[in-house]
Length: 428
Image (cartoon, rainbow, N blue to C red; front, top):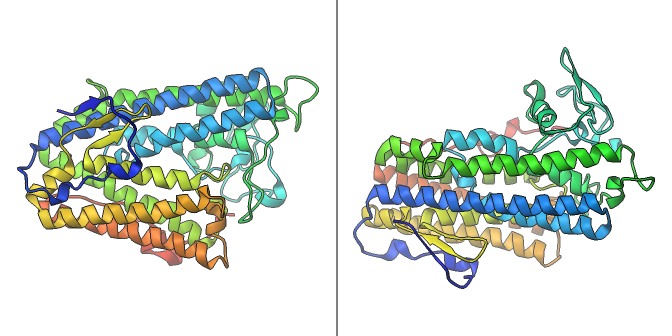
């Protein structure tokens, strides 16, 4: 059974276990599935705790808007992302999880739906989105298709009405990135240095208000932050003792359950990370295609995705409070059943982590942010990003080799950016 132990915090590098080199009996597949579900529960519980901390920081900002309280709210947002990004390997293959993912982590977004924008950078209109500049903060009445929507009160119900309105995925009204935009504002620096720079006075409750409609902007941020907590709690509940995702996994049986694990890891590694989140932006040299584009936190988003992939594979998760949750793992099972493929995957996990760590270290050191690395003409930055993409593709190929050796049926999500680059074009 998975176990939780109170231990000193380990370096992230210690997440990598040399399980592929062990000549031990395979753990029962059901025990591997139990570890997988228990790690999901721990990760999502940590994500909820992070969102609650963020919600408290937002409340402090709204109670006394200042550069200091805005900075604290931004820092809380960045911390809140750490556990959530590690859960993303559970999205693919678990339908109940994927149904909620769009509410909490949808991107990229047409931020003009939410608030004011610099049209010189953003644009005046979009042929693809009638709500491109709807600006709900400024407008108490909106037209969505043939419907006239009363937006006088900005609350969770209104945000859910706006989210992906008219079936347009860029109409992101909820989740981490809606909150991110409200805390940072647009990043108007292109592939130059600097993130978004929204002033704290955008949340002033008096004559100090900037950009108008501060009362409505305050209401939007408050509602979006509270809704993020609620939606993440629903995700955590999926993995509780009687949660829908845990029960559906159990009903699949051992073979399909193992396939679910590998579907999630392969799809996140290839189609999502290597393709949509990295190769697309690099191909277009477009900062609009970086994931955490308002805050310049993308280097951390990619790193913790990879940390999560490794945690799921090795059956070992380092919780936010320093406790370790671990149990019989996919890698231990693979080492006994398919030792050569397990060694290959172990090496690929480490190589991908090293390449993505190079991105994180470059950004953390202040050399340049992720959006600068993908900039046109930045040969060194482009090379570092491409090396990470190549390592993620190799990681996926190692996953597919293990799938084949175990005789499982897995379909890894693809990406036009990798599979059909001629179809890729700028959105605006």
